[in-house]
Length: 435
Ligand code: DLL
Image 1 (tube, rainbow, N blue to C red):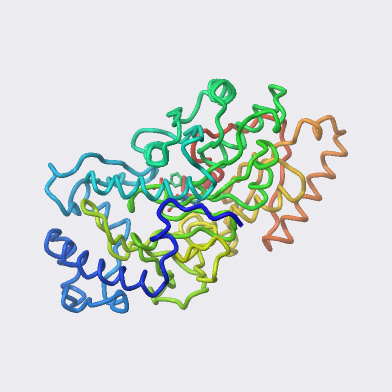
Image 2 (image 1 turned 90 degrees about the vertical axis):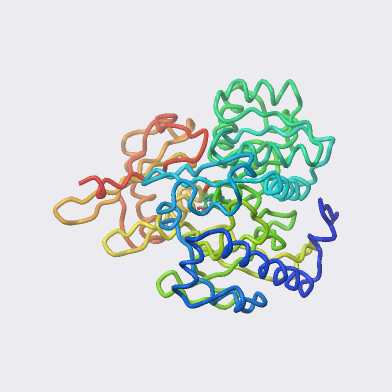
């Protein structure tokens, strides 16, 4: 396997050295936070811990967690750890409920974030010879600016497309010979569909790789996108609170995403008890940022459900890997007492030969939860008879029942009748919260 790194000495550092580096940075970061953020100092005092108690990463568990609720409570700048004039930028989350979270960056924070995205680009074989089409949204969302900064670091010709205007995306992709596409997986699927409609075959475009993230997507969706665009699709993970994309990224082995451990410590905890779980367990992902100056977070609860592994990776990177997030603990639907993740539904739909265009509608009728799934037919499935459609629906309902343990109602709908997403797709409408 060809080895490609942006910062080889860090990305392949022996684990013991990496952990020593983390310990050294953690001690400093705890002092920085304690001395500069009164809210944090109060949290630590409440837990009876001082910076002197934190001597290495083995002491991490002594620190209090911080949650989205704390971030909302301290809105807009109560967790800022440097004078405001040291900050050069903000970004903000795309959250739909409550106050948005604002994350601040010094120039140093931006530099390190861009390095993280550069590592992700180089892991796909990216170099200055590449034309990087950034079709994540620019603006408060971190996707656009993050991959853009990474593209500059690598020296790629960077196309700041932002999301939307799909015809123009395709025109520039074609005219400027784009080689790497960066956007959400749902937008990548939409671009693939539009290319097909325009009669452009996958092998006719110059793309060779995609860097897709910001929302959950299944292996089945990966294969679909790879086929429709004729590329290799890589996953990238991140969140605004920690910087943005590039907290973790996939290498060519594609068996999980390497977390940039020189900048972030990852833990898995039991979401109910807060207990730290052993390596390999499934639980909530918690991060500590080691280098952030403006907006450092210690033990931030992401709500993402995940598993970590430290198996040797053929790519040569030593940094720990996270699996694809299995959903968010707050996105999990509880339907008639059964836990249902949208990703399980997506897996069944694609395995059964349908497109990843679907919508899940949850409601409550006569005190009973109902789940309806609208699934788009592909154009070649459309000219079926009514009997054929009903049979298809019943088959899909049976496959979903086998996967989920509850029986949803399936409605097959006409091609292109479900709205396409240019950013993060909205898959679930839970009407129970509206009653
Ligand atoms: O989505 C940052 C990002 C931009 C990541 C571009 C990758 C690419 P937020 O808007 O703050 O930040 O949303 C963060 O999105 O906690 C996860 O629940 C979800 N998420 C991000 N990447 C992935 C991924 C950006 N690869 C939240 N797979 C996170 C699954 C993801 N979920």
